[in-house]
Amino acid sequence: GESVGLHLPTLSVQEGDNSIINCAYSNSASDYFIWYKQESGKGPQFIIDIRSNMDKRQGQRVTVLLNKTVKHLSLQIAATQPGDSAVYFCAENGAGFQKLVFGTGTRLLVSP
Amino acid sequence: NAGVTQTPKFRILKIGQSMTLQCAQDMNHNYMYWYRQDPGMGLKLIYYSVGAGITDKGEVPNGYNVSRSTTEDFPLRLELAAPSQTSVYFCASSYRQSGQETQYFGPGTRLLVL
Image 1 (cartoon, rainbow over the protein chains, first blue to last red):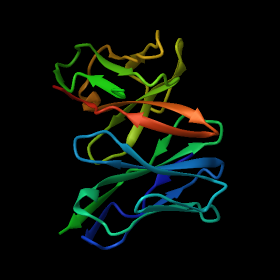
Image 2 (cartoon, rainbow over the protein chains, first blue to last red):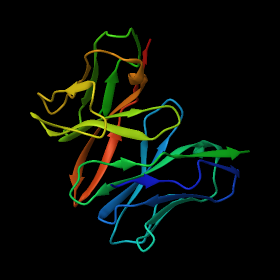
Image 3 (cartoon, helix red, strand yellow):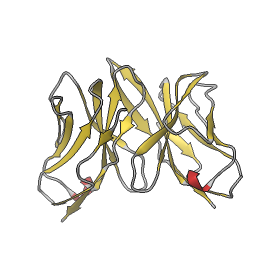
């Protein structure tokens, strides 16, 4: 079946560093991927998305990279700030589905 | 727009009790979803709806029911609460544009079954 998973459950970085959060997916038919940020006690918030016909997409301080060959997705956060501390989830929306499949999440801890 | 709203924010139930978790969105989204999130885990899809009058099961539907009589509302019903249903419940809504879909989440309902 389809699944989305993450390599690292917790990532600790210093303020100002660049952060990279990784995600593996198994459904090769997935054509759309999303990164969500979830702060403590809140619902997930959309960060950035990417379609399978792209390998890179940039937002404000964030970049998502997609490697379809190895079914790998990453989220890069530039100049990480304490406000970036949260749990980050990747999710995939398989072709033809209305359902997102979420990974288990990576906790990002940013130290001042 | 208020976005996606959920009530209540927190509830304690006794085993066997029933309750309805309310969800509403004012963005005119066709798609709505219910997820549960257990501590330290990702979200699991309970039920979803692609429009008023249409619902379908997700990954973990047992013990839950839903209805979608209007575009705006998507209540989740627990008929016989069990300790295994202790979790945080998130409602979400979305639209599809050019094959892309962004789900907007509510603030969640924390449920404790004792």
